Length: 381
Image (cartoon, rainbow, N blue to C red):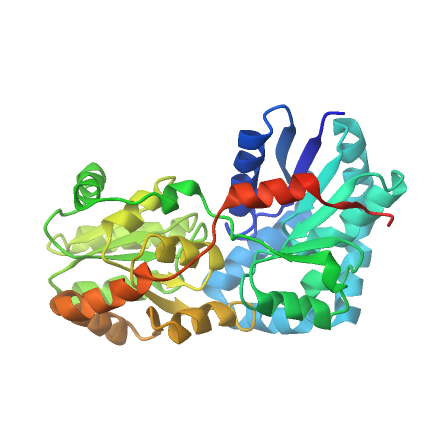
C-alpha cells in the first residue's frame, strides 16, 4: 500500500514549517514512491484563526513580547488549553477529517501542538487507522501543552524535553530522542573562498568583518534600534540585517540607510539564501528561536541572543551560555561592544570558534525519516 504523509504545521514563525519541509525532503529522498505533503492545519477560509494565531504570533513577538509571554504562561494551564481546543475543534475537525479522507492519508506528522487534539479526533472519526506522530520543535525547554495527548509517539531532541513529556504523563516508550531538523545547506562546510563568493553575490564587503542581525521568518525584534545605534557610532565592521516578513522594519531600515549612506548597512527582506548569509558573516545576533540558533551553531559562527520568549526559549539561551559558545545581551551598546571585542581580538575569536568545532549537534534528518517510516501507532491504540 502506498504511504501518504501529511505534515501538519502553522505559520507561527518559521520554526514549525521549516523542519516539516526538511522531513519531507528526507522522506522523499529515501522513499521516492511515497506521497509527502506539507499542510497548514487551518482551513484557508478560517480567517479568524489565521489572524489570531498566525498573524497574532508575529505581531506579539515583534511588537508586544510582554503580551506574548503573558499569553504563553496562561496557555500552559490545561483548563485554558481545553477552552482553545473546544473552540478550535468545532471548525478544525470537519476540515481535517475531509482532507485526510480525500487525500487517502496513511500517516500524519504534526509539527505544532495546537493541531494535535483536532487532528487526533479527526483520525479517530475515520476509524483510527491513520498513523499519527508529533515532532516537538522546541529542543531544550518545551511547554507542557505539547504533551497533553498521551497515546501518540513523540519525537524530541533532548533528554531534558523527554523528561518534560514523562512528567506530563506520556509513557516513556512513546517518546524517542531524534535529530533536530534543519536544511542540509547549513551542514555543508564552506571555505574562506566560498564565504567571499557569497559576500560578492549578495553585495557584502569582502574584506570587512560582518555582524548579521536575523530573527528567522518574522524578523528580529529591535532591529531598528540596533541599526540606529550602529549608524550613530560608526563601527568599523559591516552590519547585515534580515527582516523576514517584517515589511515595516525593512522600510524603516531602508530609510535609515538612505539617510546615512556612509554606514555599511545591508538590508534584506525574506530570503531563501539564509545559509549563505550566515556563512558570510563573522557573528550573528538573533532572537532565541530554535531553528535559527541551530542553523547558526551548525555553521560554526559565534552567536549573540538579544531576545527570547519567556519559558519556551529559555533553554535555548541556557544552552549557548552553558556551553560557552555565545551570549545573551539585550542592550545595543553591549551587543556592539561584544562584537567589537570579538572582531578586534583574533585569539578570543578563535577560542570561541574552537568550542563550536567540538559542539556535537545531531541534525541527520534521514535518521528521523527512517524512524517515522518504520514506527508510529494508529491513533486508536
